[in-house]
Amino acid sequence: MPYCGYFNGVIEPVDQIGVGVTDLGLLRGYGLFDYFLTYGGKPFQWDLYWARFQRSAERMNLPLPLTKEQTYPILLDLLARSGEPNVAFRFVMTGGYAPDSISIGTPNLLILSEPIHPVPAWQYERGIRVILNEYVRENAEIKTTDYKRVMLLSGAIQAAGAQDVLYQKDGEISELSRSNIFLVMGNKLVTPSRNILYGITRRTILDLAKADFQIEERPVLLSDLYEADEVFTTSSNKKVLPIVQIDEFQIGDGQVGAVSKQLLARFRAFAGTL
Image (cartoon, rainbow, N blue to C red; front, side):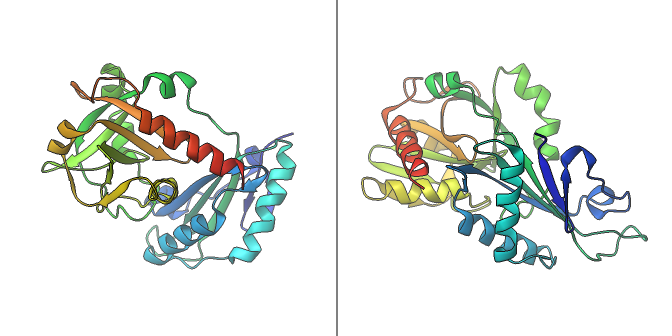
């Protein structure tokens, strides 16, 4: 069965959905999005994802055309039409159609159901490499559709044999291109507190870890990496993914650490019970 999507009140196969050429997402890059998975046939952390999408819309001065209660049945309908036990959902909202190419009108809302693209198993077993880049995302707390930076860096990432990029500015790290970062320092979990998107998986890991670890949400410096026993990144798709090398610097002994494995197992167990 084809994956389907919702666009401004109509549900149809994804490959039949059309967006007009005067849309501000196309003309000006004025749009936001969100992305999450289902587990056990239910949208994971739905309340939290909706709240973040709502906050992003408010900060972009875009009124939501649907309520949370109106949106949930649409998600279940799209999941059922997919014929799959679980899917990924991608919300995209733009400033709408603008004949003058600049004025915000009635927002366009697109909700896509998509296949889940799991992280290769070897990355959990061996960890990933990332490169550093001096950059801070504009409006980092909003999940906008502007991902030019990582796309421009794709060649450099590939040439380095890496899988992603870690952003830093003036010696302070913030986030990866599409995920948050954690440092394991003894019995402490340290994660940046500013210039980041506040990820739902990040929040889930903080909740799952707080009983056994000292949590520090604070500005994190590049120099902190030298003291880290482990580093990992979190996101909807990545869950808890170990990082073993940043540029030419090896994290710890260069192997996937026990804490990363433990928190990944906790996350999987938690998601599996919802």
